[in-house]
Image 1 (cartoon, rainbow, N blue to C red):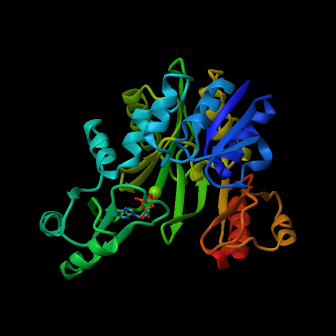
Image 2: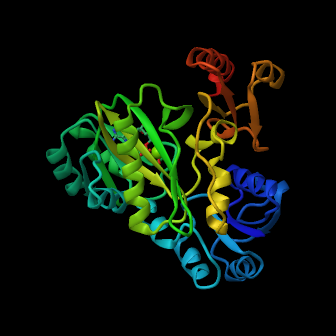
Length: 365
Ligand SMILES: Nc1ncnc2c1ncn2[C@@H]1O[C@H](COP(=O)(O)OP(=O)(O)O)[C@@H](O)[C@H]1O
Ligand SMILES: [Mg+2]
């Protein structure tokens, strides 16, 4: 079988690795030359909305997916009539706009932080009056890894903050005093079968995911069920196919949805070693119409991002059980260059191994 992937970054690379194991060939459409996924399949270097390039994907591939959410929706719509493309354009469109996304969550009975649309400074002042401070001003579109957002503590900052973000349409969100951040990864196949992985706990540094641990410690059956139900409502609303990630804030025993990603997600990288079937395996299977595999996590697992620089490989590999994934990308401050997965027979052993990884990676975070 032949899979098309729009985007050629590390997520595309890991999707292709999962496909390769079951004899699936991958072709990437990537705007920039020499992408991370380059060694794993043919790369069509062209803009993401290039019709000739999209036609080639449609002709050559059995199904197409994408590995980042800023793929032009028109490109996905264009493909939709020609080849199975998953997730579909509807889910992509909702995930690209924070305002549409949060309204969608609310429409499905899912809690979020308080929010208000902001199109100009007057609306921002009104939103501050309504929601109170502190609050976070975020651009509706194109933000990632904490980019495109500013923390507001004082009404005086309103005008400057709106200008700093470029005067583009924004959303103002109440700051949630969360106990911790979690994510739920879920997958739905073409026949409507669904699975979720155990809740993941995530720690961010400067808006970028630093490390994840799964199962998230201390998760009750009720909390997992609530997260599963959130994922289920979103999957069903969209007749979604593929992996969906939902970032959550836990406040006491409540879960608030922060954002969703219509793709495999950084907080699921641990699943390559940590789950019986990884997020990449199940995404490839779902998109190609193959049966899903078990999302069981046999032993506690953690995963740390390598941000900005790669520590000495010998030191990393000397950590018992550490599995290192390097994406072949040039170092740049804060850039995701790879990740390290560790497992432990007990939570204490896992903690020890994770601490050892974090001690080596701290400098780049
Ligand atoms: N409303 C909020 N209250 C508290 N913290 C927030 C809020 N929104 C975002 N954050 C923090 O900023 C991080 C990045 O914000 P997010 O909305 O997930 O944007 P991005 O697309 O950059 O990941 C979150 O993981 C969380 O740590
Ligand atoms: Mg996020």
